[in-house]
Amino acid sequence: MTDSRATVRLTTAQAIVRYLSVQHSERDGRRRRLIPGMWGIFGHGNVAGMGQALEEHGRDLTYYQGRNEQSMVHAATAFAKANRRLATMACSASIGPGSTNMITGAALATINRLPVLLLPSDVYATRHQGPVLQQLEHPLEGDASVNDCFRPVSRYFDRITRPEQLLVALPEAMRVLTSPVEAGTVTIALPQDVQAHAFDWPASFLAEQTWRVERPQPDPARIAEAVALLRDAERPVLVAGGGVVYAEAEAELAALAEAAGIPVVETFAGKGVMPTDSWRALGGLGLEGTPAGNAVVRAADLVICVGTRLTDFATGSQSLFEHPDVRFVNVNVTARDAAKQGGVPVVADAREALRALRDPAADAGVAPRGDYAEEVGRGRSEWLEVRAQAFEQVPGERMSQGQLIGVLNDAARDGDTVIAAAGGAPGDLLKVWDAGGGRKAHIEFGYSCMGYELPAGIGVRMAQPDGEVYVLIGDGTYLMQPTELVTALQEGLKITVVISENHGFQCIRRLQMFRAGTPFGNEFRARDAASDRLEGDYLELDLAATAAGFGAVALRADTPESLRSALDKARDEEGACVIVVATEPHRDLPGSGVWWDVAPSEVSGDPKVRKRRAEYEADRQRLQRLHYGGRRG
Image 1 (cartoon, rainbow, N blue to C red):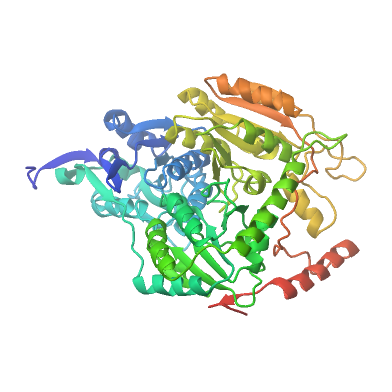
Image 2: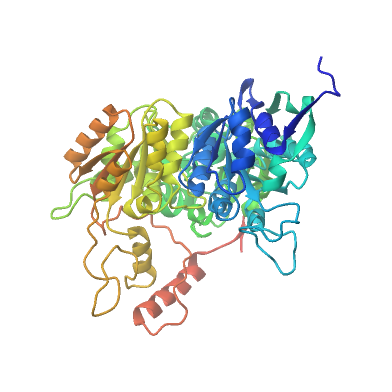
């Protein structure tokens, strides 16, 4: 038995390293390290504190060296997502810009409800040094620092000004990180002097600890309400979100859909949860969803949402649910999300709620309806024909991005993962990627963060040693964050980056043309001398050469055949690969037919803009509705 009075003298940073090294999570009897590693870039503020602690005490807390602090957070977040939120990593950064570089990553993690632990360094807690390097001198708040910017993008924030404050802060941080309800960014700001301050830590505080990740059970009364709605529904539909993935509820979702005859659509975070060989699997939902899935949702009289926040992409900015008497059932561990759309709130773990629904629904007589199944299946077949046509070559053009995805999809095998986050790739994957046969999709679209993808590939690879990890990005995203290829080289991590080189931010140009009618500033073009605008020739960049310079195997492809060959070659390589694929700039996949609330300018001298504004006003009046317990406002 450990003497409850025994202490260990350590610095604040050393205590953090020792503490994190012995924290575990456990769910359904499976125990694992909660934080197996720490990312860091050392500088003024953390090199003498956290750096020293990792060097001396970090044997069981592996240190990973990033190239950019934002990338470190993305890698840790992707690691958490790939581990279904049951493990994550910590990130240490220097004072000032090193720490604030992590804010974008913090926002992404919190918005996507993914756990990550950030340890930004802070200015001196003692003040006899005078204003120190990188200190913010706020005129009204003497204790403010740039790290206060983390407050709105963190689920838990604390600043440690005395070592013993960690006795409360670290357990609370672990609780939030392992909470299905509160998961997000945890930020503990560490003044540089306090990192090096010593304290006599209780030995029991540094002992192994296991945080149980519980599965909240549904209220039987709410289950009964949901079953009653399902019994009376003629056109029910299931919306599968990321909560299905994190709860490992794929089998339960499929079982309910099969037993009750309910078609399933998926959000970005829920992509791939439903077997694709079933008539019930309709693919993506909303703005970048499939026409077949959206047609079913439009006509649905009951929408059962499982583990989704229902963002505007999913709901078509509240235009998608057209049935006059549509009702909602929301299964979610977060009460805020369960209450959306005026639905019946089933506040529970997705797996447990789906299990609780199945038998009572069968007892109530809920069963597949042949006419509904036939209608849904017919719409699905029609969409698959359109999808196949989108993969065909257009004479006189380069490969489309849709073709690129089709070839990549065919090349992917059981256990492979494709990653996307911003630009056109996430929407295209939601629409046409076939996640059957064990091919996974890791799509971050809660924050739609350019620059997430490549470091995310590293995080996924750390969590997933087997199978290929494909990072699908445009040339614009690649130019933002190519340097993590060096991290892949350093750690010997195999990722394959597939770059759709279409000379710019083409999905935003598409939106611009739709809402403004004139292209401006979205393509990679030289400045035209006459107009003084970026509308000259396309820039000729050698992205493959830059990748090779960062240590990757660089390949090029400009036809489906050469892309297949490059993917085969990349699979045989042991290190990072980059395949640059020349694609047609203005060729998009078929649209979803769903409206999105992006307002054109209300005042303009351009007749094209005025016309689009008038159309927007009419569409908003005609399509957009709010829902209050089944009644639209």
